[in-house]
Length: 321
Image 1: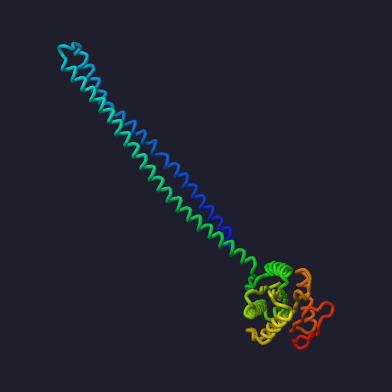
Image 2 (image 1 turned 30 degrees about the horizontal axis):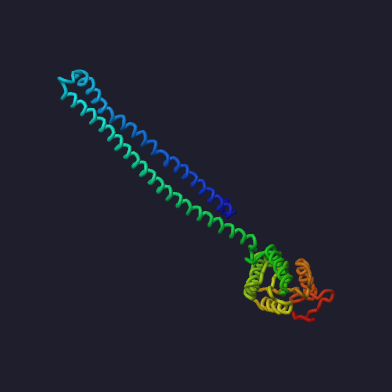
């Protein structure tokens, strides 16, 4: 399914990356929280173990030595030694407590710093993964949008894109007064070509026409397959006279081209422009379409420009006003 919808594939990859990042965050909470309680338990155990011997020594000193030495006169030296043992034992216990506690703090800090460094690296890694997933999603969306505006047979823009750009250019004309022209092209006798030679020959004719239009057009112009055997050209910054010259040039190129199937293929053209043919975008296309059908009625393989009620008559492929 992902190869049919690239954007969905990019979204799935991003969601999978987010899920992996959440797992890493959960792992961080577990790994970062466990060492400190574990070390505290070890410290308590160490304190308890280390205190057993000193406490036993203290108990022995009290019950084995201190009680029998109740006569301070006769056993003054023994009392001093017992006191020394008690003081020494107390000092040992205090020193042990400080040493073990200091060790526990050092180990906790080391463990915490190591965990922070490890998980910082994990966060950086997943951030890069997110960036790559986002870039993949953006690229997939761009490819999907491009595909939605392209014709599958000719590779030209489709009618939807042409309509969007036409609205933009008419708005630009209304703001700045720059001329804009529309040229409609219809392949002559295309149905007969399809019926006689098959759809493969028809598709080849469409591709050749598209290549001729692209090769003889400026990059700022919009060349589109408008539907069936009809093409629409949006000529930016081009007055009607320039659009007529452009259409006549394309007509001559197609009339002289030798197609692989051996049959001569020609086309008819209709031209309309602003400011000559003022009106909404739809009116401009209708004006070009009316001129196109006049060229068809006049004998095909001709260029005709829209002139309102007075449509010009054309002869032999040339323009007669």
